[in-house]
Amino acid sequence: NELIKPGNLDKWENNYKRDLARDLEKAREELFADTDKWVSLVDRGLKSNLIYFTNRLNFREWMIHSRDAARKALMAIWAKESLSVDQRIRNFCKDFPREVIGGGAGTRLNLASVLLMGVDVESFPPFRIRVFQKVCRRTEYGLPEKGADEGTLYVHFLGFLNQLIDESGPKGVELPCLLDAQGVVWQLQNHLPKLGVQPVEPKSLNALADELLLTPDFLEEISSLLDDKRQVIFQGPPGTGKTYLAQELAKFLADSESGERITPVQFHPSYSYEDFVRGFRPTLREGQAGFKLQDGPLLRAAGKARDEPGSKHFLIIDEINRGNLSKLFGELYFLLEYRDEPIHMQYQEDDEEDFSLPENLYIIGTMNTADRSIALVDLALRRRFHFVEFHPDSEPVKSLLRRWLERQGLQETLGIVKVIKKANELLQDDRHAAIGPSYFMKEDLDRKMVERIWKHSVIPYIEERLFGDEDFIREFEFKKLCSDVAPELLTSKDEGQTGDVA
Image 1 (cartoon, rainbow, N blue to C red):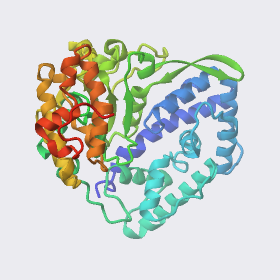
Image 2: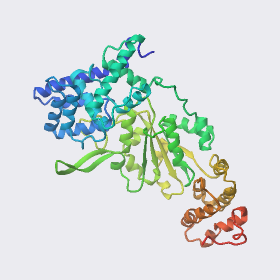
Image 3: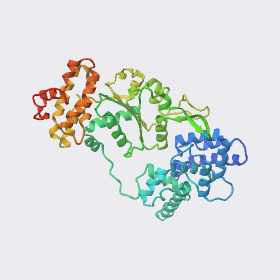
Image 4: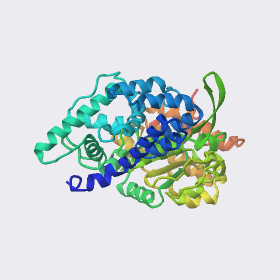
């Protein structure tokens, strides 16, 4: 209801689009006047959240380095003669190389639709495929046929907007032009209650905690830490569920069950700033080898977050301590502390906008404390992240395996809880080497599988941690531990025997 109050739609949606359209209209005039001003005007007209961040940068680079080809494509979509909108789009896409912006028809139409604002912004509003698909499903308008090209998609989109205008009038909502209708759709998708279906009750934090066999207080604490610094690190021995919880909690907080608002990445010793942030990559263009500046996961995640400011987005960095963190983050250490403060990046065009981390991008890292590279995590990183401990001798991890086995009805394997506890007591001088519960959280777990996992997963890990201490390693033999604390895990032929599985 706030949306349709006088002036709000213009303030929230239309005014900035009209400003961008004026730049594109000027670019169109300069293009047909055969001056050089059109390049900078096009670049200025595309600087917004209407176009995916990385696609805008790719188009800009192509426009600068392939000016004649870009001129031809723009003259096709901005043609002075009378052409249908779908023909304008098809002519543009025919001259616009797929290697610049690939993906499906919806991705390429996103750029084409914004360029069309330079012809008539009120008749040709911007298009976003995900918004359009979701609204079509909710209102039962119907999606276009599978495989529809860019022109067909846009005509279908305009048909939807026209129907919205027709049906809104009798309900007292006047939408004078297609730009107004598009603004309503954008706001309905991102901010207002969904139309066409009964609202689905979102999963509560309590429900998620029950599903994950964790306490609501534990999840609430992590959520509060994320709200505070925007970045946390889950640290603990292997097998304590750090990565799984990072993924599930991010999906919940981002309201993104499909994971579209989640960007995962795993660090390793050879991972570089150029991989993570931005760097040059080999490319082949028109038969010529060269290098192209490409964004890494961090910039892609930031671009997605900036394109959808009303939603939380997450970057999940698994094994964060295995990378050379000072080199990987570089000047971005500053941005972890000062969000939305722009800085000049290491790889940045002279006339490109400075980069900032949007407030709605959250970072969850996982750190394996059994990995000796943890010592390489410097104080600069530690000061910018909150740290959450996951350890088998502390809740909620301590009783996680017991709760999981009981829920699965695997009572015959409950003895493994006592075996792990005994093994971790033996490892008490090396707390970070503790054995986590995840090894044994398998739905088809039985006593034979318990022994197999111990032999082929746990013992190799113990041997690596205690390398050279053969006498101590023998203390961790499965049958020996079972004989001490969980004889019920042994079969009748095993009782009284020691030694490992043959």
